[in-house]
Length: 123
Image (cartoon, rainbow, N blue to C red; front, side):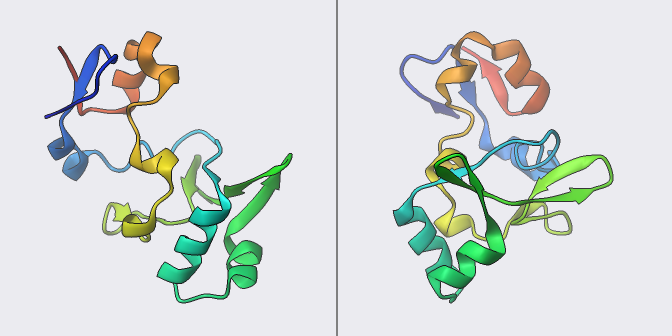
């Protein structure tokens, strides 16, 4: 069980095995990446940074976000693999992914988070 100070819930990571990647699929959204994260992701995929940017990123205002792929009615992260129910760049995943579900947004929206993530536990 993972608990973070200031959050009214805990997270049971064992729930990920049967979840189907709800945090990586569903409604369209943004996974913003920093220049350091772009370098790390490109390196993890043994790609030149410029090629990585062209292939996997979209410009959103002044930021870059990972692209999505449409699967049925879902917008999946470009790196989510439905067959393995996992992330293709897990070891280099961006901070936004690594910190889920402990996002400031969810501190006051626990019911919404519980609908998305079966690993949320009341404390």
